[in-house]
Image (tube, rainbow, N blue to C red):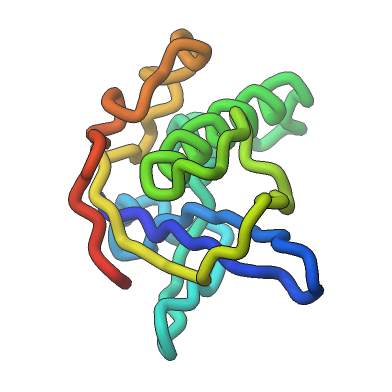
Length: 153
């Protein structure tokens, strides 16, 4: 599956950036698409319908709940998704050193805005696979390797 990974300079004189990793809706399992939060990922002049990693990795049972979702379950899903997102972002932008991607990240230098599409393992419904070992998860576990195939989006 593809993931769109971007680095965007935020307005202002400081080198403050936002890093994102989004999954194009076309790569999300068909049964999940209607249940995903849709976010437009900017690729050049085009906006592609995409979604967050948490919607992609969530177990199928997550979408079948009719009762309130326990805070612990929601927090655990968010944590696992953010850790996976950070690993994907760091494989493309090694300057983003945080274990979990912050809302903004200050660099000690200026960097150009950039967006790439990168191929990773199929992450649909992968929460149960990755959650037990999330603290030791590495980019290679997601199918990413140094010098991985990244394509300008």
